[in-house]
Image (cartoon, rainbow, N blue to C red; front, side):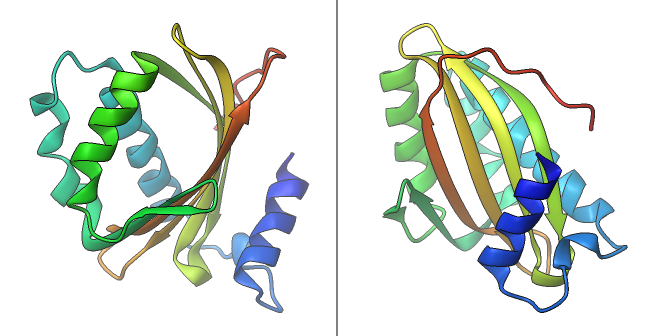
Amino acid sequence: MKFILTLLCLLVYGNSQNPCLATDSKAYIEAGKRYIQFMINVGQAQDEESYLSEIPILFSENCQKIENGTILFKTSNGFQSQLKAARKAVGVWNISILDLLPCPIDQGCVILFSWTSDKIGPHLTMIILKFDSTMKIKEVNEVFNRFDAPLKESQL
């Protein structure tokens, strides 16, 4: 799985050297985990107020979100309505990280995770996060699909 994510990182970022092998990867691992924890909080929240205050902390003002090839919004103001719509459609969700690959040279990371909800069942998502110089997320690019086989959480 690491090989596939490393290959994906090379294809996405296009460097001649592998940005995913740089030694300064801890900050990108932690930033990726913060994003996943935020999404776990959103998925378990009783109301919007419990997570809305985290949006300006995690995301740059000009953060763009792309979902399955479609641009959903180009500023962080779009998160509130997008997350509200997701919760309405999906309900409560649970997330398990399967893999997280930091790419510090290109200020990003790739995360593979599974998630499930009672309303729509299990899904598999691969996400590319890109960060600005202050480690705020400037782009969220995710691709997801329904997945029917059980997956195991990796040891990060």
